[in-house]
Image 1: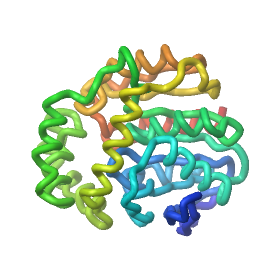
Image 2: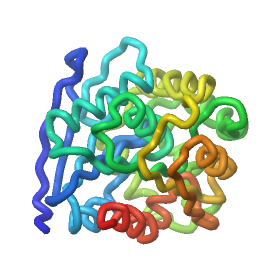
Image 3: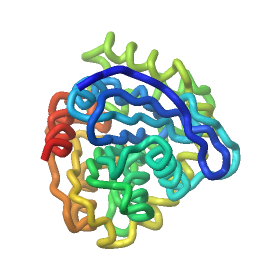
Image 4: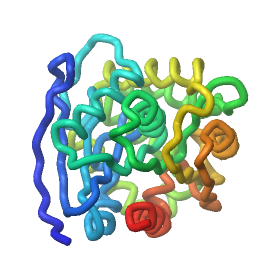
Length: 272
């Protein structure tokens, strides 16, 4: 498989520019990032997955190199953004990998545009609604306290919470590299708030029961301090064709901490 890397953009229904990059060939695998994150967060997935598939990376509206509209966002709207990426740049139904808020978007994409989605890999995410576990108050307080620090200060202050306890301290060089990647195109505070509000609305309302029929793998770390691990079982109960893979001692960014395991899961889904 080729691993040539190219970038482009697509235009959403409201004329927002959505940055897209791709590498590899074969069946499409669309990666959807988490709240406030952009496609850089998948840097450990690109080469291993593009060896067996065509990788599509998108920056959600408000992040990375995508447009940054100031009107309210919704998860449904961002799911439609993802659909536009697949419609304009895809080659048929895609395997969709979504992490955290990207998982909310992936679920909504599968509901709203089922013919565009072949399978789902949902990482560190939840279906929300009654019975789901919210973001821990300690994490919410840390986010709120860091918002006035600006994009760079917010990232440095809060990103350690997205790893397992002690990971950032035990991997200082890797943490600084990740922080540098994040800050190449920092998410404006206003856009982070818009994404946060969209995510909070989804969590409050939840996903309609039993409507996602695509085969699904749920991946979740037991040391997740953003979306508690108990949400994996809750999510599995909501999806009729899901299985859970537990990553012991992994934090919210489990696809970075345990990238080899996550990459093997995605490759297995593609090659099934």
